[in-house]
Image (cartoon, rainbow, N blue to C red):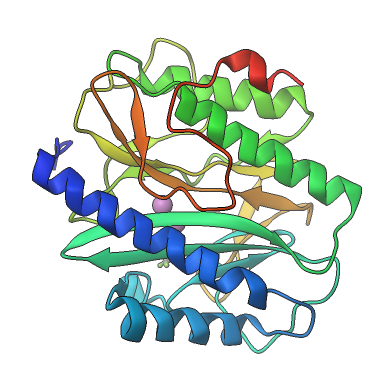
Length: 267
Ligand code: MF3
Ligand code: CO
Ligand code: CO
């Protein structure tokens, strides 16, 4: 399969699915507190998606994934499986939501701090969100994916963090994961050239320590090999005639769906 360019009608459906994905994160935020289990968060999101939104939780049974959301705590990088384990004060957790509405996917994730977190954790989270915004701000027709990967990598490494290589952003639409692969590292001037109508995610995973990861024996949970903290944010977006449109913006984000000059990210 090659890259699918979405029609105006398909973009409208992506917009709706993206908003619903963001709405699940907005809904769950107040429940991410000390003592809650990630299974309880999963159950609440599942119930909300099925009964309130009438969306389908895409992760459930996806290649055998057993739950409706991914919850990745502390040194877990991604694809954490909700469990009976409780969150405690100082934990940081990524919640990754993918909904399907009218056949189209909206995929988005956010970091949550449980109670309050260390200065180190907060700094990693802030840098990771800025790395996502930096990548997004570069999206417009004519730009190459390698330019975006390079910018994200350079920014993360300038903060002495590392970028996970094994997992990447992806084309998305009727299919959860489609072409292209959106790497969060790379060389300028390489990779495919963006065109209006492409829809994909950007979802950098940034580690406080080394970049290397491994998959636990549950066959899903990805963790840092050195057990250092890892953070991730994800948005689903489209390439528009002059830039981008983010489909999964939340009401706790100040980001404007317009170009953000790279200077903004230099500190
Ligand atoms: N939402 C993840 C992504 O950003 C994929 C999760 S697949 C699952 O691509 F099976 F782990 F749920
Ligand atoms: Co994704
Ligand atoms: Co996701």
